[in-house]
Length: 441
Ligand code: PLP
Image (cartoon, rainbow, N blue to C red; front, side, top):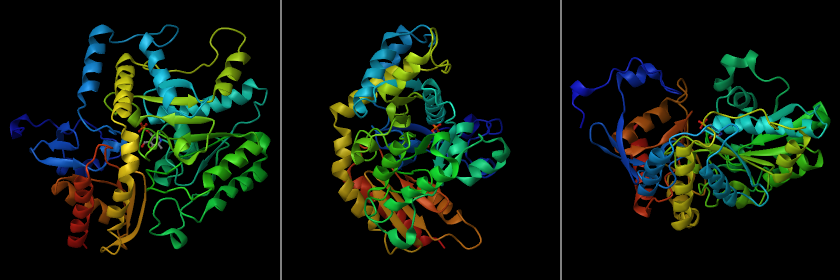
């Protein structure tokens, strides 16, 4: 327990995506984490219902990852990533490629989901240029999409509060297809909705408007997470793939949340049997023990970009910390755990019970929808008429006080626990939410 005297000054830190003034008047601070639990600075145990920010898939404080990072710090703390390498960067790329769909085995390392998205968008533009189709410059996102906070990511992203302050500075030529959420048809659906494959046809509208020769890539989250858990309707991703293929448009799946077991498979692409051209990765790639991200690229795309360069550097892009030795150590140790403990299969086998527990909230006060897939659930609440988001925020605070971490976006609660969760802990998550909902207006 921290004594009051040891408390830090909270004024210097400008917290990201946080109501800073509110937080600082009533801070929630974590000091330790192990397995399924955080410990708050007050010494309270908090069940992690969200795997941190959808990223600690193997649970907290995994000794194998700690050991790998510690060894690496001693052996090689840093190696420049440009024009020189270290062996583990190649080993880590091979390990990541093994988790990706066949042929998507060229791996570009980044440090975050946002960097992965901007990298993927650049690769798409570079690929078309390399093939003499430099006129393909348009990037297409989707309404309600979240692709991080770089200028590329917010341009293709479709969440308006993230865009409006910067609206005059977004990438030119970007357009958006419609989102897939249709509460009239798809409330309380378990898993993938039957209705809504036709939402993919909105891409035909955009293609007709702009001409396919101007479009480089379409980027979507296979399951939209940050906007409040939107599960793709059956046949939707297949149709998006067919349309992009027909017009020579690259398809990017942003799998920053969905890869590495979240949906009970190594990737959403694997689960749905739909292979895109590029996959963006982060979060679960390193169990969040060290910031890390990557883009998995179809081999032909990589080869085309390399072949087009006369000599020297083929792709003018990269980060000081691409394949940082601590990140590659964490990535390899994390992927070992996933494989040894069969955590993706574990998530798949828990998903039925998780689904039942989530849908047990149907009929609870304020709940207007429950949706789920794998170990992700979204619980949508009726917004208060004059204060959208306030009800979910109150649930978040009260759950925390009762020893449960949930996440909320607008009035939607999102649950995404570590894949090591036990059945009684799943029950605890949803019963705590139910209890809290019964006590609030
Ligand atoms: N893409 C998706 C689908 C995400 O969910 C996120 C973060 O939640 C990002 C990109 C951005 O990742 P980061 O916060 O690591 O930049």
